[in-house]
Image (cartoon, rainbow over all chains, first blue to last red; front, side, top):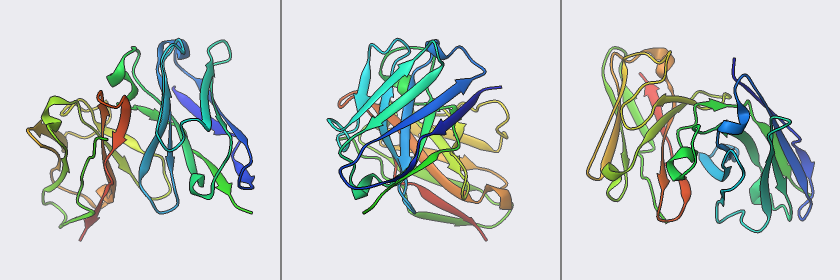
Length: 124
Length: 108
């Protein structure tokens, strides 16, 4: 059974940092692209970042580029999101989601499994 | 940047057919995916690559995509279909994943 479990959310002050983790199980993690998607309270889904299975391709939304860093450890079946210079508008539930078992643009959409999400609150 | 436009809300009576649209420039040339999100839950993929269904998704859910509009069609709507629905594409022009703003489906 495919499982994605996020952790690392919490309350952080503006300008602070936080590192999110996503533990994957039930599939060959290294073969799949992975993404982070967030949802601000009462708002829609917003794509944050994606990474290929080998980490050779990485993409960021304009709203987080230069502040967030996506990475993965295939030996540990884990996905990460390092978030720096956090702002109030980064407050959201952050989901990790599995893409396709391929590399290339369209492989980052079609997210067939999602974690339960972890809440990040940026407030003083 | 590429924009996907969805109606904020759609209402339908039980047993009827709901159609949720997703508009975008030449969206017919892209692969469109649809997600259902019930209150307090993570999104669930209900249609991918315009018209394919993941295993476990009822045949009542179908999709189409042509020109500037993609459509998610839910036949014989049930109370349990009440949720927010999002369309999604990969935009090769910006190398970004793009979501539509979401449509709240209300079952009357």
